[in-house]
Length: 135
Image (cartoon, rainbow, N blue to C red):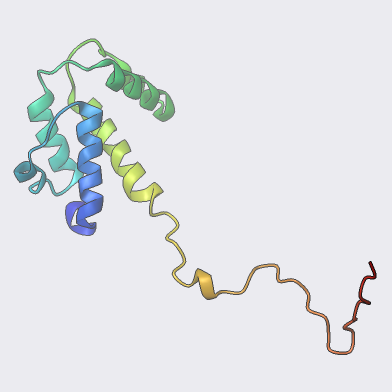
């Protein structure tokens, strides 16, 4: 379940991204019940099946259809939402929020690690003292 594998802040960000992408408000009581991608798609399909796709969503679906090589996703953009279109958008939101943001976790010890290319230090016998400049 996606919901149980992430922090509440991460889940709230995903819900907000879904709301923005679909132009819909998801009540908190319903959002708390959404566990996985299938449940998210089911809920959205139930609430979007009679709703027309707006221009912003149509542009996103066109972009995703081209990127994924799935032209059928971009068909019927002047109509109402279909399950496969909802699933493509949800999958993209989860990909961006779950994998792109977490693909390389920050190094918690970065401040104490040695630099990759440290500057050479003079050896004790090789140190030079520069003469003082005269004005």
